[in-house]
Length: 278
Image (cartoon, rainbow, N blue to C red; front, side):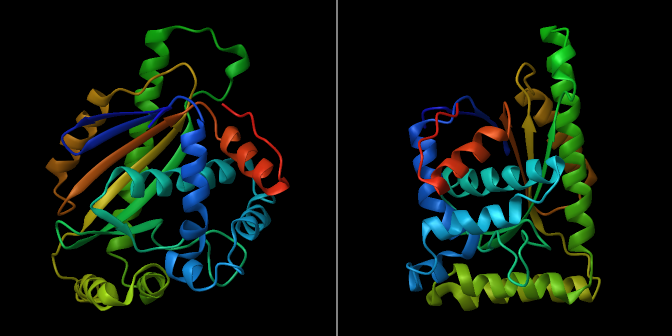
């Protein structure tokens, strides 16, 4: 896709968003309602769950957040969009919006079903900036690249720790939320199958069986000058395999200059204007 560069090595993917192109904007338009509410719900009542109302509800949840939280929200949205578009074997089994209150989801960030492996993948998204003080930045390419690699690995490490703790947490509420999401995202013909997989994963967690789950660790790094490398991401992946925490692991590192361009585009869409964000 124009504006999106993908570099792959083994199960590691580096995605660089160089520009918010018309193609990427259109992809966000097409997927936003399904991501926020679930494709089943959106299809059953397209008038109530319209694109415009989704945008309004997004900003009702977004505008009162701190900058750090906003970076995370946009990062998770980007991850949703790219996951379902770039990995054709994956079907989304979770929704973005929390169902009980005006906030984003709790529990697993994203849950997907891998059709080829007949397995659920549990995703954790961590977002952050490489350099906080851009105004006083004394640009040096090598130093910036090193900082990007360090920050990106830090985000992946946090994602690893959080998803591992969540997968061994015996609290039913996390898994019950995931089961409800399947009703909102998955057609009837495969709904029971996915719910059975989730229930099996939960029962093994509850019984403290030594059964490893499959995960996707996602970092969203906002940086302009640095450039986290695929070799650095692969280095983290090799270290992760040695820890033997998960059955299958995919690393997805997304890089974009700023979260604000996505925010500005969505706000212009809500207001019916034209966004010129790059």
